[in-house]
Length: 147
Length: 147
DNA sequence: AATGAGAATGATAATCATTATCATAATAAT
DNA sequence: ATTATTATGATAATGATTATCATTCTCATT
Image (cartoon, rainbow over all chains, first blue to last red; front, side, top):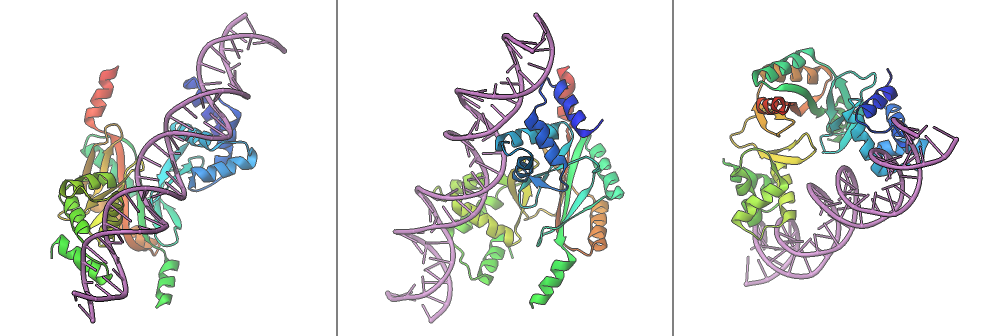
């Protein structure tokens, strides 16, 4: 079952409708990689159909998220972005505070420890966010050059 | 050196001034625990001096943050909050997605692994955010009761 | 294929948090 | 005390998100 089909199944289960705008927004979103703001997703969608409205993008992103096809990723500056989960297994982020570059990584040891914490506090796991903030090698070099 | 003094030293170093509003906002902020929105900090400050303005709170929080006396903590819903660092060593957060309850925890093993990742990618560490999301025992019980 | 009830759309207005502007007031160095 | 500089608070401006609503679309049923 591909992404579009999964979205259709989700909508059907909720007695909601698959529409052209929804399909276009999902396709536009899936055609990207990385972290997109709602506005960026609107721009992608308008490449397919310029008539798509801002409001519909906000509404549809939430649906896609609730369908389990995307996740929200808050940037360190508070900007709200989304990334789709197709061919994109779980990972965490290492971000450069200077240039904004993002490196994705996965550390099994950290994942294991997180599970332990859920158990310790009797929480039912629902996910997590982790972002490491630092200065990338290039920006370190740039800084040194300034002096 | 206490918090107020540290803030004064920071301001002096930046050729900026210690003022009544700034002192009041810092004192109000230090009198709290946990994660406060800018608005909540304004309310605290107004208990001391009702004349304090919203804009000054925003400006002063940034100063306090840059002085290293507070840190920003984005909530899972995107709300921007701040917590002061006095008598409040580093920790991470476990949040209930249902009721919003926050548990603070510290896991040395995770901290160690994070350091390794910085090293692996040659990043200069500048901090990190981690938030585990789950359903707390109380909300699990409430859910079960619904059916 | 036509119908009709319900749902979705896009334009726009409304809201909310945050930032910018600016005339006045407070501060700190002389 | 004087003065140059910075900070203040009121208000306007901005940017992101959400609500409203008349019109349009979708889909199960005929």
